[in-house]
Length: 402
Image 1 (cartoon, helix red, strand yellow):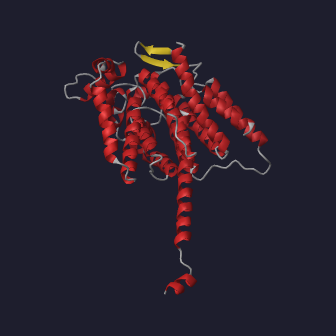
Image 2 (cartoon, one colour; image 1 turned 135 degrees about the horizontal axis):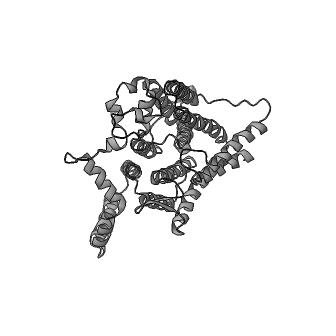
Image 3 (cartoon, helix red, strand yellow; image 1 turned 180 degrees about the vertical axis):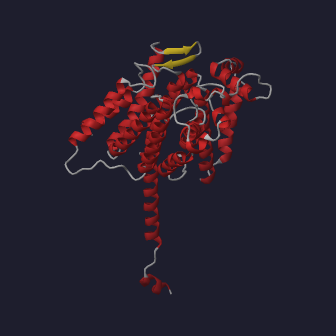
């Protein structure tokens, strides 16, 4: 590893610390800028900084983003459109250099360590009572918003999880416990949904593995039944259930469910997240509405941005840029496997309820998934070649057998 790698790791380590208002420049960003400037300075002569063929799809997407926002900025005289473009351009730059840096296996392993350390640091901040609260029941640690914290912790977890899969290891259970505990404290319903999907898919893949490997299913069922019976007949089960049902995140989930019911007289989840703009202004999904000056959508319930990653991209930039974005995602994932399905499905479900595209880890996880996909493909081809070598019969052998 070289010095620019360490600057990037420091950038990621400091990312949870918001010294200034959200959406603006943070101290951590200085370390990324220093990282890529140092890389430019120490790059060997003749080395070219090229955009990976997969990331060219992202480049096309960002180009459309810049063009669409520029048009609307000129139309309305609002600088907010161009600020939105800067987010995408900045994250594109992060992806280009992260992919270059990730060729160094040691760097990638240290990314995993930093993600683990970020989870540990947030636990210590909570235990030492240095963290902040957004409201009485919503904890946000060193962040400016509970959803920011929940998303960062979840992304740190699945990033560490995916890199551990790359090195054929298992992420220690303690990191899962700490991450889920922190997310629970934020009372973020969107992230709670993502976590639930992640572990549900994980459990299903484990069951499939057990069945396929013909393990003793009766023994497994006996163990599960014993655990359930032990829990149900526990003397403190009523206290546990009462405490859980009264927790702030469960209350928030119940509120979200109530908003989906026919008897709901207030605003709906779709309205509160600004997704109603897609229904009220469907024509904007064709060529894009531009990302900024949300007050112009006066028919919508709120003048806030659309809180959904894929849907916001569709509304702000239209069909073609959205397809380019999805192609980039697909090119990185390559295919659904046992190793990545839980990460991909949970990220997709969670992204429907939260705005993630301004966060570097959201983009970085796709590069890491691409590395995992390439590794699994190489292993598959290697095992296939070995199988062919083992089973191939030479002409001489054939004549001897006949």
